[in-house]
Image (cartoon, rainbow, N blue to C red; front, top):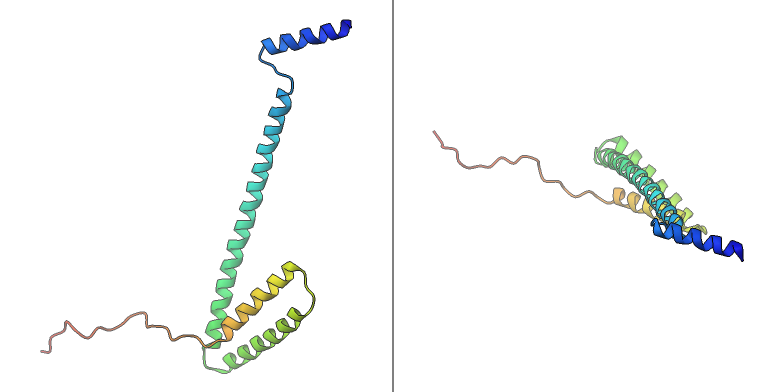
Length: 137
């Protein structure tokens, strides 16, 4: 009984000073949540940087492949054959049982190969000569 009285006095003293039982655990929990949010933000930032890098690399590789396919020389035929081989390999891979991530990977690769193999649209010239505004002298 004597110990209970001493404990109650300590609790009363701490309450008077602004201390509440469990307050330190609340602060610790908030600090841990803040730290975990910072860690999560760092991970999201790293993944975003990686995604941007991959998108840049994909843009360059797609542009090179498109230029090679539309060159009109023997390289274009060879590139088309390579892409048709890749399409065949990817379609075989898609028929196998795959996990969700690999299924998305294969589907994206097939979509890119199909995009490259379709005939490119004629691009408009960058500069057009406008016939007008000149005087015949």
